Image (tube, rainbow, N blue to C red; front, top):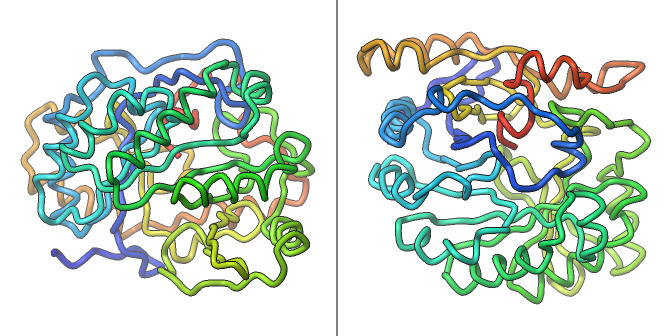
Amino acid sequence: MSEAIRDTLSRPLASLRLSVTDRCNLRCRYCMPEDDYVWLPRAAILTFEELERLVRIFAGLGVHKVRLTGGEPLLRHDLPTLVRLIAGHPEVTDLAMTTNGLLLAKHAADLRAAGLKRVTVSLDTLRPERMLAFAKSARHADVLEGIAAARAAGFATLKLNTVVIRGFNDDELADLIEFARSRDAEVRFIEYMDVGGATRWTMDQVVSQREILEVLGRRYGPIEPLRDDARAPAERFRLPDGATFGIIASTTAPFCRTCDRSRLTADGTWLLCLYAAQGVDLREPLRRGTTDDELATLIRDTWRGRVDRGAEQRLAVVDRGVLYPSASLRADPHREMHTRGG
């Protein structure tokens, strides 16, 4: 494995989140609450061959974790083909995907056979009527079917992501832990973040890590923190009965100082931080014939100059509100969460 290059805070370039489409078949309130969107032009979307080439270059610079995201990645036709291409690189030791689960039952077995190792499914509520109100979809049963299919397909790990929002699903924490336990999965509670498409975010809707632990402590008793990978976004905990869960406290306790992740949008814009205002266009040099070495130099030099601490800087804002109003998102769709990938 190549030694990872490091930025100004000695953070390695180790993890790449690869958005394969900006389209989604849900309209979740924390990501896509508006009615109208500006989509990336079809001609701008990178081909599988272009995506594989960039992954190969990133892998040569130390990236060993790749996560497929969207939008909803399973809306990209023939995704197992891309998985097979990426899985063919021995430097990529951890190939995963985050999905909303609506189409997972149909594709889980093929994705596993192609070389996908891990799956994370977004599951914000166990109540179909809440999903309908929150994500404008009545397909809750399809998500549950997708989770079952992922378990049956034999992925190394199965995680469930839950964005916790006060007044929406903060009364389901224990139910979600029990659901995950019964499916041999692990739930990760995510603090509601003021990123991209969260145009209705307010701080009073955020349920902090401290509050989550207090609620679960009253239900289960003393909770033990687990010491895992310091660069993982989630802090993991164990209940007295042995069940484990994670919390991603990006809003109230940012992990910027250890963040080794960057994001590549479906049209080739490389973002060094989820909160970054701009990114680096890799599609243009890719398509004009730039060599792999030249692209590697561009990526290496950019990462070495990285100073991003977006979540930390947002935490320091006294009168914290929405990051981008909807008009600003329409002016630049790269700021949308569904374009950047979570």
